[in-house]
Image (cartoon, rainbow, N blue to C red):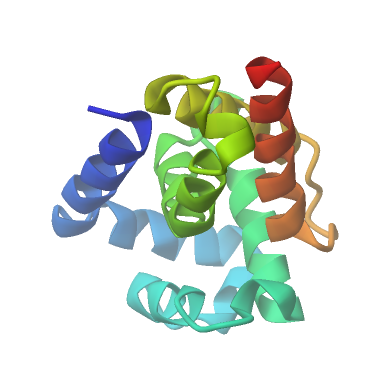
Length: 151
């Protein structure tokens, strides 16, 4: 089972158990940019729209999600639910990156996906609430890390 399959499964379990619903309600209170969405279903629906992460609403939401994932858990620890959601909403472009021939050829799928996720997380810790170009920064950081590992 690959890392991205685990992310997908974890997201589905947390989503169906309504765990992400209650977490999202809390995040809306903590992050003004998340109030643009009525609930997690509205957020997920809009994440699927072309160009969402390039507009200011999507950019601000991803920045808030990064901030929450890195700093927002109990006792100033990372928030696993936010990290899961962050990885899940970027899953499609990440899978595409992991299958690029310059990454996929030297690395097996597990290693490529692990390197991409690690690169994404390294960049996520640098994202501030006012950051812009967040989706591109995260995806490109994952791609760059995987390329370095593939050399």
